[in-house]
Length: 293
Image 1 (cartoon, rainbow, N blue to C red):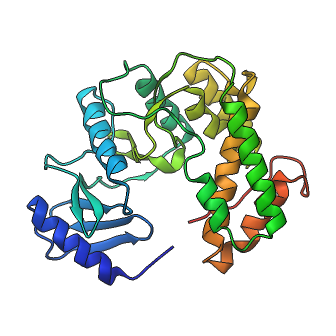
Image 2 (cartoon, one colour):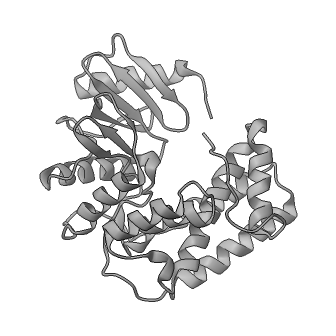
């Protein structure tokens, strides 16, 4: 959801002054719901949504904890942060070297390192797979009211099942949104990004994203998935709670598309298709959903 860079620049300039950075020469990288800017000197500035102070602070703490434990992750700069500018939390990061999108094996390599760490004494929330789902359904005005009512019912069903989910692997720190879009590969190896959803919970939640990419969207081949499972040491699709977690992931992916389709007409067909898939109106899985944003 691209918006004007003019108000964002004012926020950027205020935040840079507060944190001791020079905003001269700043260039927008991505001006959307969360805004990303680049400063001269390989500094990346992330401007989060209003009301996201705790999440922004948690991202910085998690990044520093990972660095202390030698897990390859994007690096928070040694400034006092976040800072608040125009009611929005702003954080500062070291720019990554030249890189490309990560692979399934990059994801599992970093997840194994993350999941093996003891849970730290940090203000981490319990995992909630349904963060913002209700708000996204409410914003999905391109869908019919019947489809939105179905999504609300599905949300309520999955949330009730989550409360009595079966036992699985020992709980740990989970990334919360572990897929190839949140891992990049540099010349020195893979790097983990985006700790907005880092929390404590079942490691199966981090594994289910790759499983769903095979079973639901077809973005991962069976051979790639088999390699992923071999590297991690378990196959989450064989766990009795898999259908629950896969359903939650599918619901998140669908409501994300539907929310943005309300303001981006070019995504309405994809959002509707995802709803049709969940409601049994389309062909069987895998559905080969197209990327949004």
